[in-house]
Image (cartoon, rainbow, N blue to C red; front, side, top):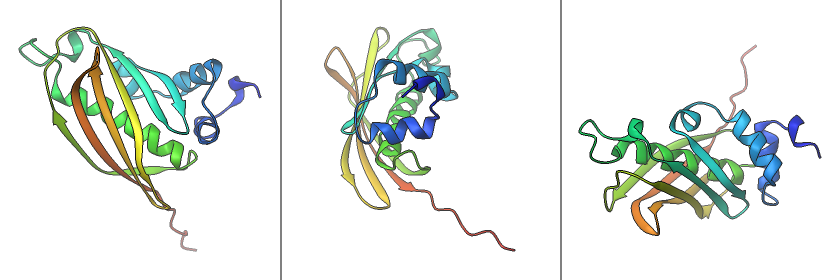
Length: 157
């Protein structure tokens, strides 16, 4: 299958059955704009078991004092990876993030953070995802995300 013709939804559906290959990950990056691109989030693995991404920290990620990465940035990357993880479970169908919580363990000001999303529970309508943000194996943030599969309401005629 030619990855260059696949939609974002098709890629997420594929990832529910098998890990995405390098060309498919590149296509995912091309299609996945918004905050992920703004933050410089790069997806390394999208698999049926979870998602792994990384972000190189730069000055745009630091808090107003420039001393450490903004907690909002950490939560944003955790929410993004958690959403992709839940979207894989939903086979690319739309999801809505219902709740995100996070516990910060330590600060970081430079380097690369790795973000890993794994399933806690995958139900028919709700997915619970555990997300960890680490740097060199040290935990920065642990987050739990609850997503619900979006339902389409019938249009009134």
